[in-house]
Amino acid sequence: MSSIVKEYRINERIRTREVRLIDENNVQIGVVPIQQALAMARERGLDLVEVAPTAVPPVCRILDYGKFKYEQSKKEREARKHQKQVRVSEVRMRPKIDEHDVDFKARNVEKLLKEGDKVKVTIMFRGREVTHPQIGRALLDRVYERVKDFAVMERPPALEGRNMVMILAPAPAKPQRGGSGSTAAPAAPRPVAQGAPTPASVPSRE
Image (cartoon, rainbow, N blue to C red; front, side, top):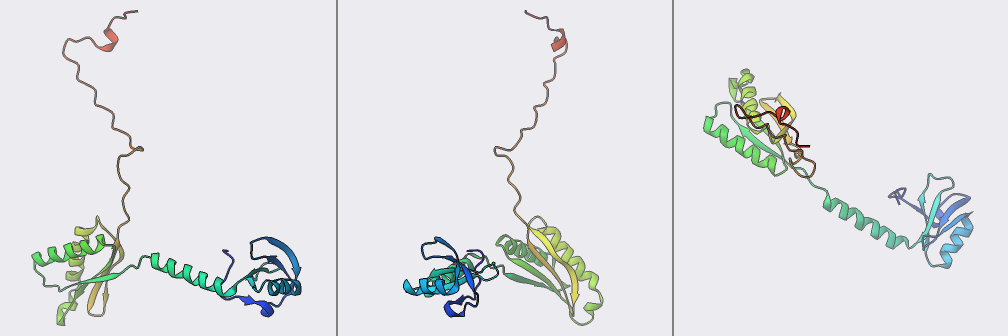
């Protein structure tokens, strides 16, 4: 059903001389004139639906169009339900921020990243503070340094008006170490006691 599109021509709206027909039991009827296909659909109390209009000739199915549309919309709702919505959270700071508050903000950024959110870290300048963007850049670099194990820099620090913004995304999960594919490190050779014979000097017992 990968060739099905969302808008379908049905019954008399199908404008072609012949179609490749599939019946309601998914049986391939073959190529037939459009009038014969319409007659077969009417005899069964069903619809003729053009499901692959770009094929040569177009592919049509005999089916209950109302039921078919309902099932398609249900599948789309289920697919949307399972799509993960990525949120963008914002953490704001001022250039003149205490070291303790920087730690608090960095922990908050880390928490949001671990929850799967993207994080927009914003430095808000006031007055003449905007003439010293290097202060904001240094702050954002410090935050990133503290969360870099959990983050990917999606957008590096840049000025947006009177704010400087950096956008971080959660880092992809790292592969687990160990397991069946892991290889143990070779054991270190044992030291040979002084005076003890080396393997080469041990006499053969054959």
